[in-house]
Image: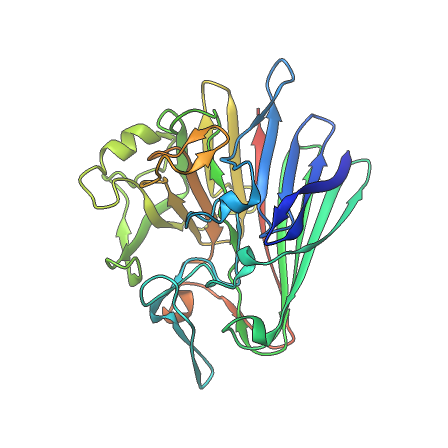
Length: 344
């Protein structure tokens, strides 16, 4: 196992550190201090050559040149909060919207926006990184001051485990995720890759992508991904929709710790990622309107160049009964973990 750091580049005149974790199987993960961006997840081929299974930009500034949140850490609340408003106890909070009238991905000063401090460690079986940051009350619209630590562990079983941990000095919301864009083959689109989601329904949403509170059955539609489904075939069924692809919250079925929420696979390279978490939602976004000015390392942006798979509690949960618990009680420490099991 190996853990290292070096300067990646600079952003807003501050140095950005690249932290790399590597296991004995030639798997490596690189995370940037700015925004907690997962810059690369590299897996070897049969000749031992490494291949990055994420969309990646060459420079930190490139990640912030568009609104795609490519590979960024998202929090304190993933997804949208309708009308940028929520109530805790008897107090109603009004946040500054950053998408129309709504709040998206924690707002402009969320987890993705800051420079994190990092600490590396390694043992014979694991390589770890801990990023931490304190969000003071004056730093954002959310109430109180929140202390956040994010623990990354790469194992020799080819698991990348990410654990979010937060504590606040006042009642708060907590529903973080990672906005990783996968392309397992490094190809121009993900059309020939297969996605399976442990879900029987998805959220009905408004034109502003705010949940109505209703669940829509997947069976018999393009949303039926209950078995491995070729993404190109599913996307073809969505070309008469405004999005021309997926930008939806799948409601995860009840499952055990040994049951993946989802699996993304590429038969041509024999690569697969299984997703595990104690979560009730997976957001699937297929980069529907990406454009050529998005200069990814593996080529210019285009529709369906990658697929973002965001594990979280259902979006806007604070405003919908039965959507899940995103409440962080004052002085409570709350954790949320995502495991990415890599196969190659």
